[in-house]
Length: 180
Image (cartoon, rainbow, N blue to C red; front, side, top):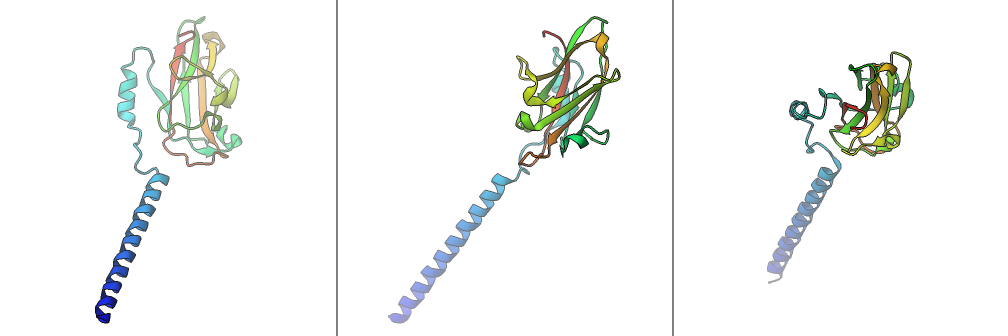
């Protein structure tokens, strides 16, 4: 009888240990899934371009993808890979605005910086939290007249002080008539 109790006690102990181990494995896997971003959807740039190009309220789609954590000094350099040249054409007295829209993961706007420079040596620098909100969810970073400048270069980056990971951060650039 004592032997049978020992065997039963040993089996109960083994079953309990296996159960605890399985629970720990499930908890560790759940924690890992919640802290990584590998399972989050990626931007399908082809379909995103297709959708935007069929929108009658916008121009051809310009975008800046995969923003990096950089210091302000490095973000303003030409070596910053997250940049886009913008050529604006139209009537010489036409007013326009440059508007940015989130495409990928959304980041707190206070960490997203931009620099907009023109051939005429005009420079606009700031973060998106200071940009004017538009009625359709965008951020207007510049309003001007075609006589003020037509060729622009936009550079964007995430402040290196951002505490989280920077993955799949992208913005669409739209040129609109002012007041639209």
